[in-house]
Amino acid sequence: MEIQIDNLTGSEIIALVGEHFQNMADQSPAESMHALNLDGLRKPEITFWSVWEHNELMGCGAIKELDGQHGEIKSMRTASAHLRKGVAKRLLVHIIEVAKQRGYVRLSLETGSMASFQPAIKLYASLGFQYCEPFADYIEDPNSVFMTLEL
Image (cartoon, rainbow, N blue to C red; front, side, top):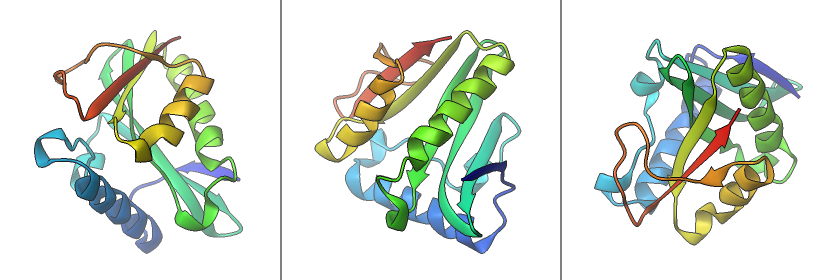
């Protein structure tokens, strides 16, 4: 697997981000949907990565800098054909390492609370993320789970 910074212009990544955004919209009420579209992911405070193997897109994820010490994980998605191959874990480990290199002391995330999000929650917990209160501009929401990792 090769992880690379992505400029979000390739047709494969555009399709995967679109699939992710639509899937999140289908599962969450509008007021609880925090996924970013392509324009949202192209902001300067966001670094976006794609995961490839043999020229095949396997997944993606991003980190948003909230401030000089705190980052937020965004847009974690594994392509359907590559589920349960360790793509998300490999990318998450990479993002954690980048956060440490940047000097962040905390890395946080918001994800859904519905049953379909349980595999993601289990992955985050397996790497040390713990439940926390809403952070940044988030508010308490029964459709959201908030987790953080002290670095």
